[in-house]
Image (cartoon, rainbow, N blue to C red):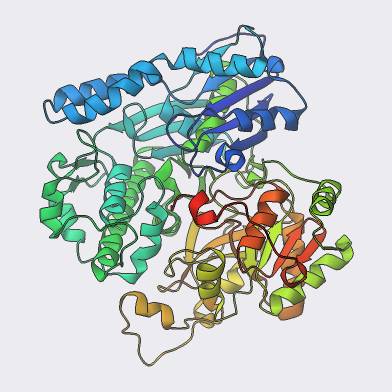
Length: 620
């Protein structure tokens, strides 16, 4: 993206990411993020990669404008550079890459190589005419870096982007300073920390670009007994954190799988088949690659601090969603503070490319920051629904419900939660990014010893080993966790306070047997290594959720609730009241809260589901 000194700066810029995974749209108005949403939330297709028409329509509706009012449309990466990388890779690995080449080329020649034409066609459909559109392109890692730095609380920061691969870059460092963002160095494909982690995701039987968080959650059940083997054979790591993969063990550059036969030989077996029983081996592999990832990132970040004049660090890219590694960096790195884009994956690129255009292309100054408050509005950037709209929907389906005033509802819900009721909580604007942050959440009592099993098996219908995250009043976080800073986006893992842990005579359980042990007075959110993925809840960004936690604290002296995303396995997080009601009725959830309307499961009639959710949604 070329810089310019144009004086006629745009009112509105629309950024989009699409055609890989997690398509999204974001609208900014004179540098302020107005709206952002992923396409999956509207189409109900997990990780939908198609042109984000529905997300664009939402963003425009939120701003009260039409597409013709948008001065600039910007795409989050440069397809010709990506095509160059594919061609060079296939040539470098010829003839081994021929099968992958034959599979990929028809798609590229038909659509992706002519992406500018494809995008113009899609935008013109929304315009309903042939109006000329002003279409620009950012680079992939530039979009990531911009999404991390420009909304961050910092006026100056190092910006580290780590993902699978963009056009060429897989890891890149940028220097952010007010409205400037300059590249410092990068590591290029096929050497990729993100793809290394995804290779183990694949080998352990989980879906690539979806199941990495399962691998992270599985890691505490294992031991890092394969770490040395990984460092000896798969990746060479220097003291500055730079790295080089041994491509003999990987197939993603030339074939249709992530790992090669040499990888199978090294670890003694072919990849685990999806949905089969998880063994101790997968747990140990997960722990090992997690340990390697943390070691590489810590070396890299330490070197960045040593060689650049920065007190603060920003992170983006898919690897920045590894909240265990993030917690380690916060505790062990020399930076004063770290900020992570809540939509750190490709969806966040929609925000990044729009902000890059505003600040870098149009050279617009950024509001002075205080190193504490970010510009993401708590990531509550999606659609919201009024009580009037919700009542109209519930009346249309003859669903019985109770309406409470703001003064009444929080005490009523606190009592239900204290009684062990699992509650669907739908209020305010939908979150942007992969985490439910108290806008579209399923919540419960963390003190309940049965709650983790109940939520996993009867509500989410997912694997029993997966942990649940706590939401805690920001002002009380240090009472429950070894964590003193804010964590509004559920992107940091910390230890549960030792004062809450329970002593045991036998701490020698292995594997999934660790699940049977009650580890703390908050058992439902305490992982098997006594950790928790924390969300701090703030009155300024989510006053209703803050009030609910305050009411629960007043009743129980506990200002923590379980918070998991409002969906079942394989389903995108719910967007509308209709989505929420359907999910409520499909599961064994007890209570549904739609703004000020409260539904009780036992009062509902028989639910006629038009489709089995297990047939409707692919497994994640």
